[in-house]
Image 1 (cartoon, rainbow, N blue to C red):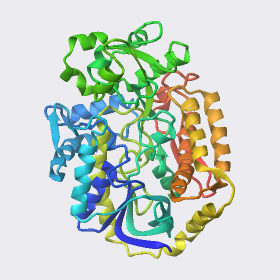
Image 2 (image 1 turned 135 degrees about the vertical axis):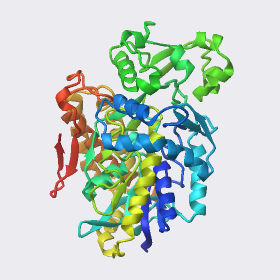
Image 3 (image 1 turned 45 degrees about the vertical axis):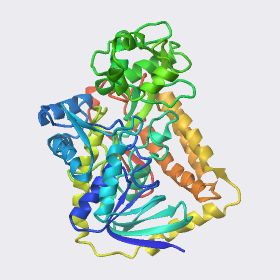
Image 4 (image 1 turned 180 degrees about the horizontal axis):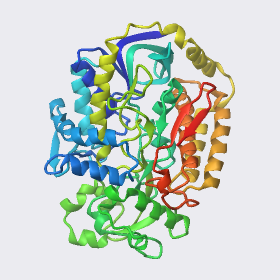
Length: 529
């Protein structure tokens, strides 16, 4: 039995962008359904974030915020979006208090949360409760695989209920994509496993254009000790400790890195330097070292504990007694759907906000900007989608969904075929090894061929349970996202920000423009720029 759900606005994704968009729709007196692959507010990039927001508060001006954002983004940002972001960011982060979020204000931003490894939960939990109280309808454990269009207009979506193991069809006057990035398609990542680029694939096939997909940010310093969680490291341990290779050489000095704090202002350069050391034989089992013994001798527990992993560093790693291993980790995608000031994708009825969007962060993201971004454009997308939906009449989406529903049945009924999980594991390895921090024409060509072969395998996938279907269906969209990243990286024959090609190691001023991708009527991907 196929279930049908109606709403004025459908929001896909229950991270910060989706929650803020849904709350805005309710403030405009419209009905809204918020759909997510996991329980609302969980298993998204917001909840596992560091809980820090960069914004024009407590002495930082919007002009300074704008300048820093564009400089770190290597001037590839969409200046119109950045101007809005910097101007409205301060107000958006402070109004979190209206939703029950406990915020701590400091110069240039705020912070939330009190669980070191889940600081973002300090935002998503109260916002989810607030949204539920004001009438947002949550439907969890649904993977949406297709946006439905009628006469060129987005009118709904179809998805699979992981627990009920059946299809579900959504009717909506407008849809907001807030599905996050694609960090989960890399082997080593701090992103949740479900962040597999669904929104990039959904938007592409619905007719939206994307930009900057080649720019994938890697956090330079995360724990890389066997059996240890890959916690991100920052604060005095990384700023005052020695980041060294196997020979004891200080990596920042060796590569001339001077912009501090490293993890905020030099993420791209430090990640590149660390990976170069590893590839050139200066690493230690695929990692480098931090020697923080002097830091632990001089600094108090309170000063060190802001790394969020003090217990691991001191009690399990004995970091006060010996160096420990760290390595870069996939962290954020700068590219995504092209939007206007209000999150409109230029596909009637389709809006987007958050990491699924490109243009705001340019070629590299300044630390703290991601969480502010989701609030600024989550609100704007929710408001615009609500206004648009008031003018639309409900469409009949059941017939439009039949082909996708039949596809679900084919996968489930198939007695033999490939496992989605196995395809995903191969994709993760390929993206890390061939499309990671260090790239070149050969690695990208190899990756493109592998993704092509994996797509052929994905045409013969099977699934015996709802959980299998979840992995299988998101793998198909993950392959689309991987192809977009690879095509963008192949087209950008220079090094800029988080994108580094050793066969084109310098910036090319003539390439200070976005690489834009879209789908032709035949289904082929067009690359321009």
